[in-house]
Image (cartoon, rainbow, N blue to C red; front, top):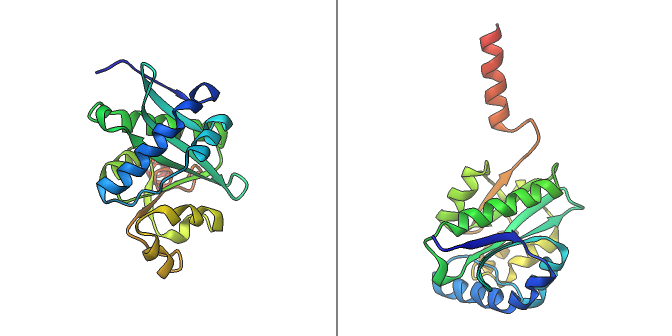
Length: 194
């Protein structure tokens, strides 16, 4: 494996925003999957806010993901996961997504985390982190979030359904103790004690 550095992006990384934005645009076109693109300015903003994770190979961007908050921090989305083509096959998507997950959990411990994806690989990564598939009614109702989908090739599907359905799968990680995993563990321990 190449020597990658994975860290929270900051002002020292803003010069890489153009390359990351271009990679998102290229992946959106080439993969034929639902992938919203982001401008270099948007990516720079996430870096300056400390809301992005970057993987570097020497001085080059290798992978990237950012977090966005909605409804005053009640919901957090991990978005924009991209591994630049020449760095694929090294497990970077998983490592960067995990780092973004931990960054979001540290900064917004009580928030529901969510994401939208058409990528089976991202669904698997999310599942490993504890995300579960949900209907879109379980996601934020913040209009600004849904506006971010405008650059996705499937936006017309989302629009026609009134933001209730798309080709993407919505996935949520709920940190509250009412999650299925907690209920299962709790019921197991109760039955053993009885």
